[in-house]
Length: 332
Image (cartoon, rainbow, N blue to C red; front, side, top):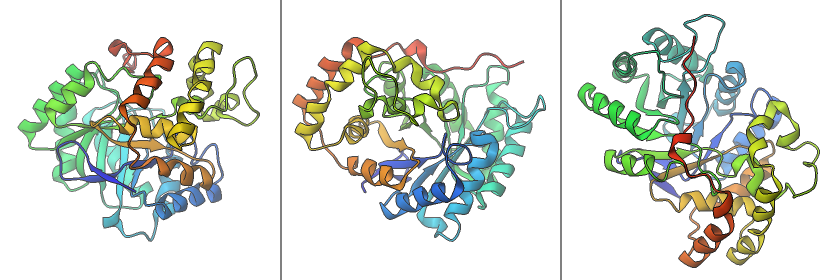
């Protein structure tokens, strides 16, 4: 495993981090989830990403149990706040009330007295940013989180939040966006702003929901048991990539992966790590062998010729519009 600084902070994270968005507490049984966490630890992964909303808070609980007994100082545990975690009107968003209640719930479920990084899961258009940042400052100053970050924020939102964070003397060091060969909306605006501000990217879906694994073939139905056939595992997210044009071009990447001595998943993960603003790529798994395969992307250097060949293949189906940074509609 290789390690990188997260932004311009002193925090080191593993190049491959383990995330449990659509697995723990929902897609796989706890025994399998724990086996995947053990595989991550055995492979040198020290960075674990979750969120209070995953599997209706169950994912945090499963991760907490799976990491129980590990040396806490040797782990970087990240969680997030924003999406609804209950039926009440204040059980969501980035109000002071929800943040202060949510951090306590997350710590209880994760069985720890602090998280290393606490992230705003989306931007809240209905709460003043000053209120949100002041609440985050209290979370940091109370010792419940060491650093703060955001997820899927635009460049302008990042700049405004970072300025407030400096006034409040708290370290805003990360953004967690979707990023892959096929989804490159952060490259034009978010990455340059982040480099200027000292913010690093912890990217999710480096395999484009599994499409870049090459297992989905043009003109054929998705394999039985795959993510595309399971509503619990994010089938609606993968649907946009399941066109013959995209899938045909993904198949053309196979000789590139072979030339690099990598599997298709390893190539996809290694590709996002070539961006120097990316500190870590989040991978999930339902089986331990998937973890062991993915971690082999750590430390891989892809030469300029190979990167150019990838661009030439995927460019016609690549999304680059920064306006497509994920942003939720204003909540009721």
